[in-house]
Length: 293
Ligand SMILES: [Fe+2]
Image (cartoon, rainbow, N blue to C red; front, side, top):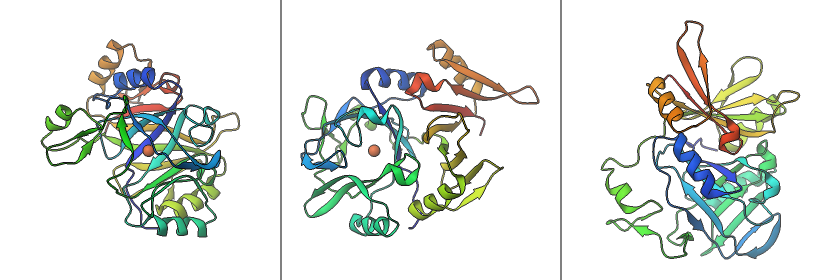
């Protein structure tokens, strides 16, 4: 598989409105108004019969990659039994999702969550079990992706006709487009590091390089993926944290403190503030870390 940059990190939560407020305090930029991705014919392992899947969500304005927060729904891929926290990694739209499906099948990876529309696989989740509790999201561009506002009215369209989940003014105020999120690393906890490296390389095409005895890093793009060996009494497998490069940690620290965000300062050997770690318990079990570029 040709490696692609990560488009967004998906986070699953119990209460979208509360989570959106918290994540908005941590990030220095807006999250889109709550909207829904509402296919009539979703199917997944939990309910293979095509059915309505009414997923409420919000996206962070920062991009490359962005963050998507989704609320529990259904009894399959987005079920409360999955637990809160890191849920999926999404990649830019593919020309041919059928080809991706076949590549995954050759690796023994099944599709758990899919939409067949207009004779195309416009959306597919590769099963989370294949990649240490992380779904990978593969989409095709199509004008009929079922996005609607939270009140089920149509989502906004920019003057050039493209759809957006953001307030129109938010996007029109950004003549150079959405800013970069600054996310430079995504941490994934894995039980078996060697097995994980091999499977991640096969599924997403990144080449992993060992970085110490317990982790491996990969990715030719802005946001790298770090696989981290799970500690014996450690947290669950899966997406664990994202690190944001930040040239002004002091002012970020003051901003977070002013918003009552629980954060731990990491001081380097030379006595400088080198990292700020937001308490994962504040962000649905997912860690956000700010560090010097
Ligand atoms: Fe997504």
